Image (cartoon, rainbow, N blue to C red; front, side, top):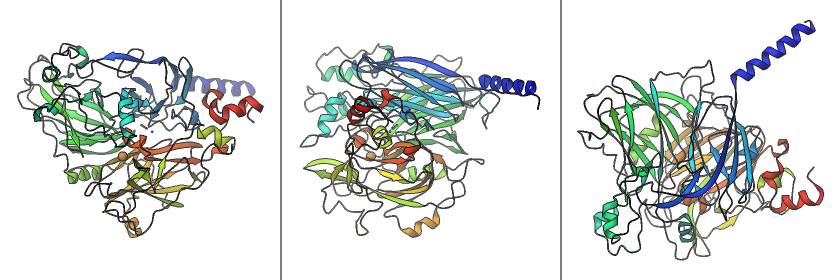
Length: 588
Ligand code: C2O
Ligand code: CU
């Protein structure tokens, strides 16, 4: 090839690349602000004065560049990009003590990473319980230019679901680590001045939010609080979300849950939903009347506006898996040209009974990969069984995995592992299994557990199966839902089962069309099996996405190919022992 031709080839390649993908720049400041998400004024964590934080929209292949300034006065902050795999940029994962040092007040950290796959994602704080304080927002990745979604729609809406507590996260965290333990309870407002509230009062403290807005029963609360004036019914912060639709069209609803605690169910009066995406991967479309969504999950559903156009309809979100203390969150599907304030003729759809687990299992089992989704390797080199138990350590209630409750170290693993620092975390190996005589159907015989910062070191590029095994909690006849989220990867969901996983259950694994996801639920007294390929050098959290559970130690750390990680930005690791190392002799 002549050199001229060669040069013009290179130029046209560069041009194509430049046209196809962009770098999108954002300048953000995280700070506390006043807001009334459910009409009751509180302080919460916002970004640039917004709650929820700004929605990022990008196209597959784009680079996201967020300059994040910590404008909190006295606490650190980090932001995690949930569902983004961070191939080659493990220091941008935004996990305090794992991928980076918390950003100090007044300091700025640059998150720069590629979004390589179209889908519905979100971001949130990943330090202490900052997510529960409102630090979250949506991240939507559209297909690259010239590509098409495998389904048609005329318009789309984004619904970011959350739960909101009137108790501060500090109050919540102190309660979780106190003797006696103080549980945060269902989303509600435990108001001290409310003595013996009438039974209907509790259900009035509703705070499930849709796009940061909920309808908490202010007037009742105001009454109970003897005239406190913090409750502003007129605040537009808490006006119900209105989805303006035209009759006879198809709409895509992107639905994400960033709840602190609640598992949710979403239904729309008179309308069926077709599920087409889960956690940024396409699924084989299926039609439902209502859908479950656990914290950390995202879905896209299509709805047809084929109902009587002279009416509006309710969209309702209720609680699953725990006896709800809240009213459902509501939004209005507003058929144009009706007024949005025209009340729907039929009452809001009733979500299934909170403890109808068969309903939830049947929904989960319908989620299968769409044709063309990458298939899992046919076997795994390693199987790790993780027993989820509620335990006690020195009388404090914790959650443990194979009897180890996760305690994060002061020095982020990514730096200390990359530079082989000694004593930065517990070097012992956590077990790949749990005692074969452990009875998952009964409370633990010996509830004592230990805390550790140890990690699962995974052979780079190997395939790993993880069996998440649920068990009975400390109290008799209690086993909870736990949605598990893996950083840095998608995994295939191979199957679910009841009671204790047996080796023979592996023969039932779905290797044909298992869905690719980043979050999966374990049902009470059940197990869930997943498979992933450890092909992303870095240190990755794998944990229950229930904020108080993670805070109580419900997670593990996977480290893979850390020696292949190059050039960690020093701002990511200038703290703890890596800071000393940087000061004394610089890092290699
Ligand atoms: Cu969305 Cu480690 O979490
Ligand atoms: Cu949990």
